[in-house]
Image (cartoon, rainbow, N blue to C red; front, side, top):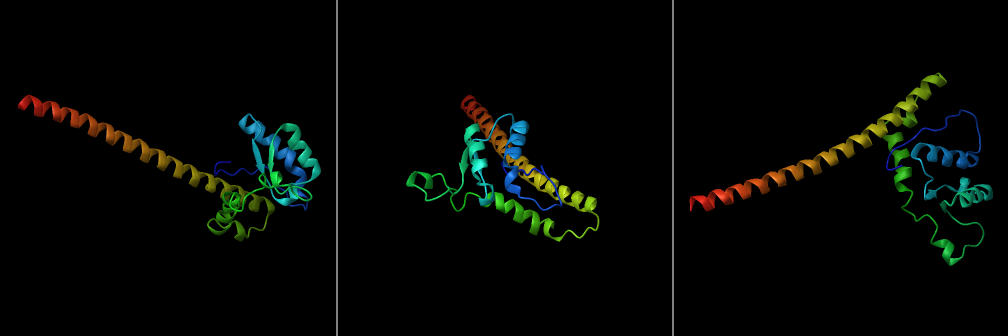
Length: 161
């Protein structure tokens, strides 16, 4: 969500993650207080059951339609670059922060490493946002000071003349 990652489920057992969509949507509602407007998912989540659940909740599914798609259904598909930020977060966690190189021997230690990497991803995102807003705030402060000084200078110049 907006570049922030959440670690909702963790399991070492093999399972079909496509069955977890309703649970994930409900966690989203609990976390943010409302259902998402759109859900972008991989093919594994596009079951008829999940589609019915999302339709019941009034959530737009951004995924490839079942069967032969109509021209209208094609507009609801995920465009090629739309999931890039999501997949990019996984890539960033793997290549920059070592999510693909965890060599802990105990499951609990591995889970701690994974949770720590997610925490670092979120802290980096937060730091970038703070840096941006601080830059905007400083720019506004400098512009305000220059405006005040130019008015004072104009008044002083007028009085001197």
